[in-house]
Image 1 (cartoon, helix red, strand yellow):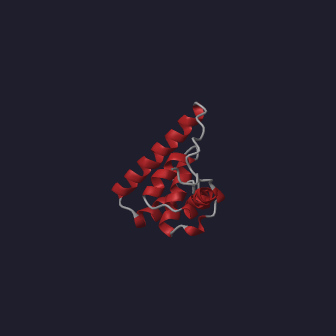
Image 2 (cartoon, rainbow, N blue to C red; image 1 turned 180 degrees about the horizontal axis):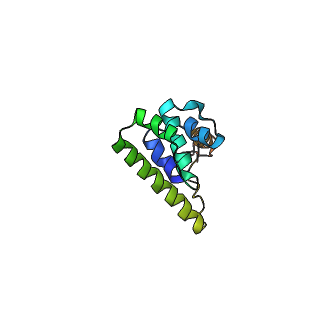
Image 3 (cartoon, rainbow, N blue to C red; image 1 turned 120 degrees about the vertical axis):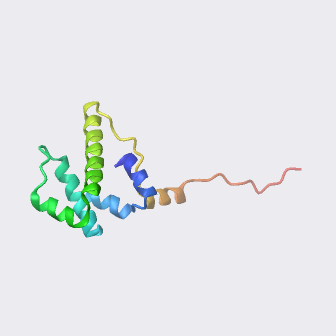
Amino acid sequence: MDINSVVGRKAGLTDEKLLAVVKDDLTVFSDVERLVIELADEMANTPSNISDDLYARLREKFSEEQLLQLGAQLAFENYRARLNRVFDVGSDELYQPQILADAADKIRVHPRKSAAKTS
C-alpha cells in the first residue's frame, strides 16, 4: 500500500477504501471500481489471462483506449511489486490510516509554555 496510498489520498481515496482492500471487503467500492479491482487481480495472476466475460464487462464501461491505459498502469504496478520482491524491498511504513494519525496527534505530548514570566 505504502507510496500508492499517499498518491491515492491526494486523488481522494479514503482510509475506508484503503482498509477495505486489506480486509478484502469490496462493498465500499462502486461497481466500476470493483470491476477495475477484478481486472487488477486477474492481471496479477500467473498467467494473467483475462476472460472474455471480464473483457466484455470492462468494454461496457471503458473504451479500448481507456482499457489500454488502465491495463498499462496495472501492469506497471504489478512489475514494480514483483521487482521489489526480487530485492526484498520492504515497506517504508508510509501508510497510516488518517484516523490513527489524528489520534496519535491528539495524545502526543506538546511542550507547554511556561506560565512564569522572566524579569
